[in-house]
Amino acid sequence: MSSYSIKTISENYKMTAFGVSFEDFNDWAGNAAKTAAKKAEITENGKLAELLALADGQEYQINYVLDGKAWRGFGVMGEFEVDGAVVLDFLAGDYIVVPGTGADKDRLADEITGKVFGGMMQEITDYKYVGPGNSTFVKTAENGEFYGEMWLRAKKVEG
Image (cartoon, rainbow, N blue to C red):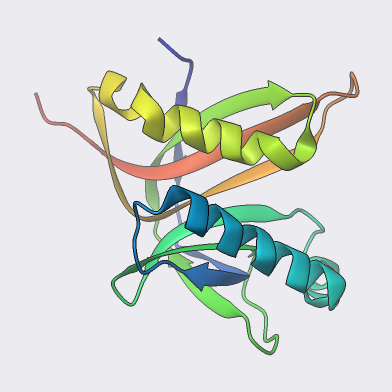
């Protein structure tokens, strides 16, 4: 069983991000292409750098349900007014925290996400993911590898 921990967030918080909505949640290749194109666009036009400068510099990959559709974006912790960005609400409560390490910074968030939704959530029986979103960050570890964590809001399953 993969390792995870439960951490409690005592207050609601917000994240500000740029992203894309998916018409078909199961179109993995198409959604990956849309996500990559959005990341390239906000990197090239400086919007992501603008957001990172307003916040603490830590970038997050965010999955969310927005207007009833699956949405994926890139952003920061906190609420900021930036043209074209959306502000997402994350609720207080228990969060499943899943760590991961790897050598490729750009792939690690996707690898952790794949591990979580590719079977790990079925292994966790004492908590249930309730959303409305989740976020993953990646940073450089001391050994030069990369370290990341995915945070998913969950409720304890009453036995």
